Image (cartoon, rainbow over all chains, first blue to last red; front, side, top):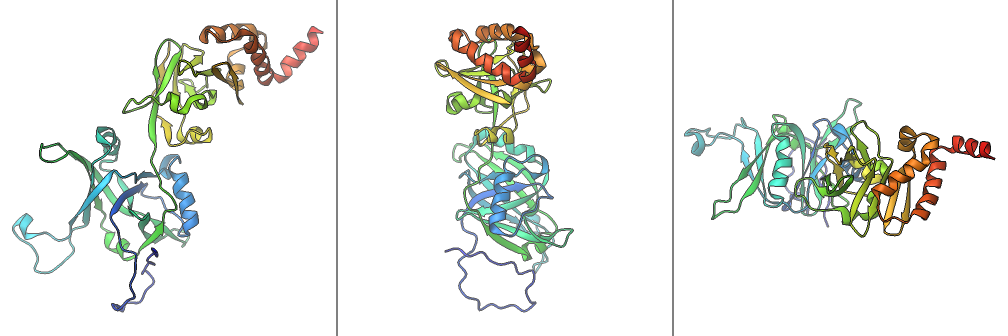
Length: 294
Length: 71
């Protein structure tokens, strides 16, 4: 059984090294959750899990970006002090001048995931590493009201890719450069158990077939999702034209597996994740692109 | 309000608010023709019944007044 390691931010200065056996230590990485720099969560596990679930579809800075579906296969830790092997010189003892950085190796998701993750390049965020037991690692910080909150480690993201060299498989290299406050954040680290798998969203879009008719596809891979969602797509409020108005009618034909829009000569896009989730279409969000069906 | 109706192989979703924005209460026939054009093969009789319901949702007061006036 896994027990959360309590934060040591309120512990004494003495070091007690003859501790009992603690089962919780970072297991193999399952991945991570990216949040806005200002995003904080409850330290109460049940509330934390509710906030995580609602964060997947939340708007603006409250949106979270999980990558926990087995895409991450490994990660390498870098950083720390200047090493002699890197620079030709180095300190005799640890001085902690450099911040820690880790590189997650992502073998699944291909160029579609790469393109999505690259949007984070250079952005300062918070990273919540998660291991294969669903333990989320973060830090405790007091907010302006003096209430202790759980949040990820502050970091800057840079995403690049490793080409398939012939002898080595291609991969996304997700570099996380922890901030200058990492030492304090790590001293205050804590864990919370994720109650269930959290998955990110798939961007979806309309694809015109003939005049006034369309299918729903995955925006990057182009996979046809029309039949998957079926009649659930026949809800006018799930679409909006460039003037911000829903179509008067949308129909789904099970025989032809496509959607018909009235008025047919307009440009439409699918709604945001919250609207789609409320209609039973979970895990997807319409990308911000109008498709002309005329 | 978003209502959904199934006629044969076709499931329709209507937006009463969008209908109110685009049509007048007297445009029911024009709307029906437009739906028939956009959905060839749909059975006209049940579609007209469905649109009667949709129209009452979209124009509850006006539709009632119009019917009273007709009597």
